[in-house]
Image 1: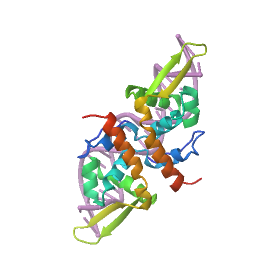
Image 2 (image 1 turned 120 degrees about the vertical axis):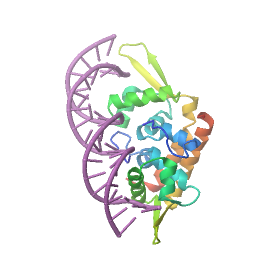
Image 3 (image 1 turned 30 degrees about the horizontal axis):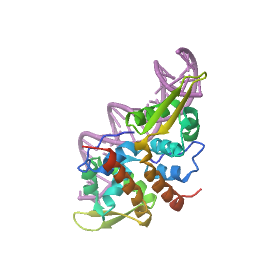
Image 4 (image 1 turned 90 degrees about the horizontal axis):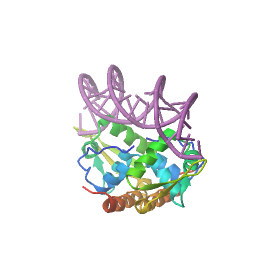
Length: 107
Length: 107
DNA sequence: CGGGATCCTTGGAGATACTG
DNA sequence: CAGTATCTCCAAGGATCCCG
């Protein structure tokens, strides 16, 4: 996922941004959190990915300050994920992707 | 790279778009071709990736009609890659990524 | 419910060598 | 130059079990 850059244009802001979100699951997580917070289970079902993989992405997004994790000390436990300010600045990427998807992909 | 969708929101246009370009190298290829065609070797050096990997991405982008491949029968051979109309519709994604990268990433 | 720990499998990517 | 062909390897990801 968060790969390291090696090319001669690794310095480019596009490359640095792509190194963070150039990943299918991460884009889908940001999409899911676009309109409010979601629980771990909701994301799990929406992405159709195992907990292990989802956790890895969420931890990474937390570290990058793109996603915020809030734990509610209830029984059973509840954990809500939401976009930070930085994360919300990724929404134009999602929107551009949506435009493209609507225009060029079918089914 | 071009993963298959399994989640409950796999139908979303964002998901379908992300399935195509939710990959670091693909985003960098589109970025590199944004301002005109480039040769195989130029892309290779820019991305810092092996020929094998680059070829896989280019073939996939060709199949998806995002990139066009033109062979010039010269010696030594020359092959130019460029964005198709569909590929150019990905530029807003790259631009959004650039905005994000400029604002939130450093170095 | 929201994970952590473990085992296991696969294919994606590097390195190298070769060719039209 | 622009690939293809092999081999190898490691790490990402699924499956499973467990726990607070």
